[in-house]
Length: 239
Ligand SMILES: C[S@@+](CC[C@H](N)C(=O)[O-])C[C@H]1O[C@@H](n2cnc3c(N)ncnc32)[C@H](O)[C@@H]1O
Image 1: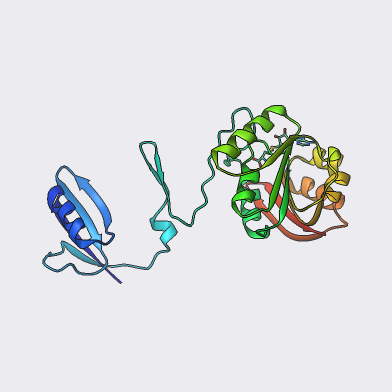
Image 2: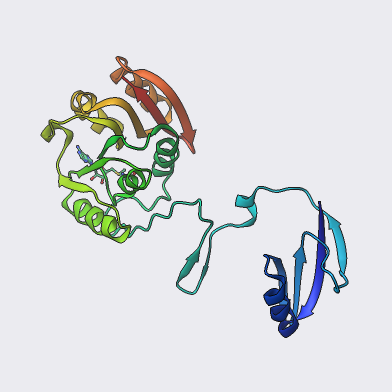
C-alpha cells in the first residue's frame, strides 16, 4: 500500500478537507503549514513524497486521546469512567488489569455476576457494560460501596451494591470475580465456592507460593486459565 504525503497552508488544508470528505492522516502542523497523508493519490495535488506502508491494525493508529476535557476513542472501545476516591481500583494495578482481561474473555453476556471486593466498582461496571443481566457488587468497606454507587451512576449502568462479605450472601451467580488477597481467599473460600455456578475470575495472588496455595484451596474446581502480569496471577475456574 502507498502513502501520499502532501503539504498545504492551514486555509488550503481545511478547504481541501471539506471537498475531500474522507479521513486523512495528520502528520504535523508547523506555523501555517500542515503536513498530511492520504492512502490514494489526490487529484490536482502533487505529493511531497510517496511511501510504501505496511498495513497496521486500526487500534495501533487510532489510540484514545484527549482534547481539553474531551476524550476521543474508537467506537469499539468500552469506556469506564472511575473516580476511585478512597477505594481501590483505578485500573492501573496489575491485579485489576488481569481481572478486566479475563472478564472480557471468559464472561458471557446475559449471565448474572457477583463482584466480591468491588473497590471503586470498576469490575462491576465492566461486567454491566459487557451485558450482565444482573450485577451485585459487595465490599466490606463502606467507602467502597459509596464510590461504586457513584461510579455506576457516572457510567450509566445499573448495579446492586451492598456492604457485605461473601458469608452474608445466599443467592448464587453464574459468574464471580474476586480481586482479593490470599488470606482473604483462605477465609472466604467456602462461601465464594457456593456463590458461583459456572465460572469465576480470581486475582490478587502474588508469586508462585500464593498461586499454589490458592489452587489447593480450590482444588475441587477446574482450572481453565492462569495468567501472570508483573508477578501477579489471575486464575479462571469453572465448576
Ligand atoms: C484489591 S481491592 C479490589 C478492588 C477492585 N475490585 C479492583 O479489582 O480494582 C480488594 C477489595 O476487597 C475488599 N475486601 C476485603 N476483604 C473483603 C471481604 N471479606 N469481603 C468483601 N470485600 C472485601 C476491600 O475493601 C477492597 O476494596
